[in-house]
Image (cartoon, rainbow, N blue to C red; front, side, top):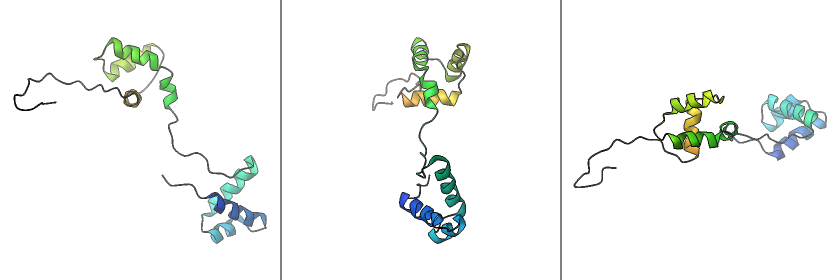
Length: 128
């Protein structure tokens, strides 16, 4: 993901617009896209600021984290439960989630759910 353009560049471009230059001319002068200066100008008119908005970050995990105690309790009750079975159990409780959401939940909490088959001991070296 790219980085936002500097506040110095933003302020210089908007100062040029304030002095009477069009947004497109200011964009050409400072080497940015015309839509960028237009967007900064609109943002300043509507909100009063032209700082870059936040980028990236986790925006959805709080929905599943609200049900963490129930998920962890179901997992503790049945350690061999599959993600699909867990999803169905949560669905019966009114929590609709995808299997991938549950996978990311367990990864975030450092819980591995890999089922390892019992293997006979090796005489020469550990097998796992």
